[in-house]
Image (cartoon, rainbow, N blue to C red; front, side, top):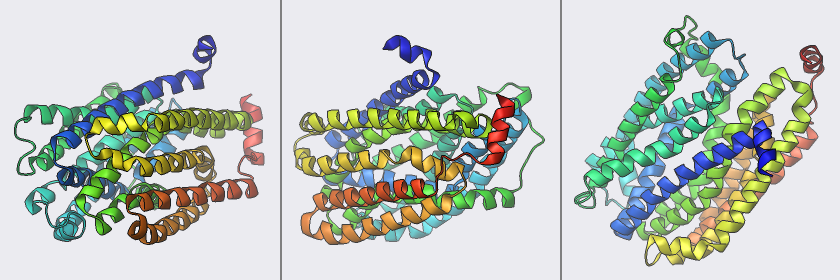
Length: 436
């Protein structure tokens, strides 16, 4: 079995990606456990909610540029380094300008966010300062995406997941005796993102030779905006599908319940962590196969799909059987999240099962179908949240996620089959024959 894995490039790279992702999972869990045990439950809820808001604002500010960077760089020929690096440089400028705009928006909305999501109990100055994290979180994602696109998968996975957790652990460790007082943890979290963003840039540039760091290719801002905007809804609605529940729980329930649901969500996200490792391996290769070796598309797609379902199903089953022990680690009282966790684990598996099919919508430039599906699933999620949270609390939020992810999977599979997305266009078939 091991010999087979080592001989198969997809399996071998996926294994290394999963190991790297597992390191990131461990470090992120160390942060979550530390916060849950060190802070009162209400304060822990505010900390986890802050992370959700910062990552959400950062995602909206990118408007799909990371998806475009992956698509363009992974599709480019390996010898076209000038194009790859020119696209990266322009993406830096694009993200910087839009991040500044969204930081200003964060500052304007902070009083409303404090009152409606944090029960008015978070320090407004600290909350406003956290907006700086939007820019540096974007740098983390952008550099990780580029490394994935050039198939430096392991370092890309580590920089996206392990790096922010590592810098946060270091900063918290330096201020261990005081980070739990006067909500200092908010400033420490923001500071850790600054360090992680700078390190992410250094890691990416370390993989470029001196001559490759300059490029005459520089697409205009308007060109990037036009190409990235259609890709934005996929990422935005995917984020909202995952985190809308947490935000709505913060609207309807006290901060203590936000902490419970956040912990259940973070445990269930282990499924998505493993999925992310597989995605980092599969998506750039699927792009490359489609553009340069279309004759191999059918077999590679189904091999990748089987790999995703097998790995994610195994992780889901293990997490469910260990749920009691895992919740116990976070501290007394978090066992109350067990039922919500069970529902969320099933929901995340359903979501993961759709990932390779979703890739083909993007590759075949039928993103509008995917956007329609995500909008439909999100609307169902929001409606179910309003209905079920009031009746069942955090279990209602988890049930809303399960229902919406079921609708998502069914819709993706239906449109995938009806649009015959694996059918290779005649032009690509001819290209594949020439390559062969």
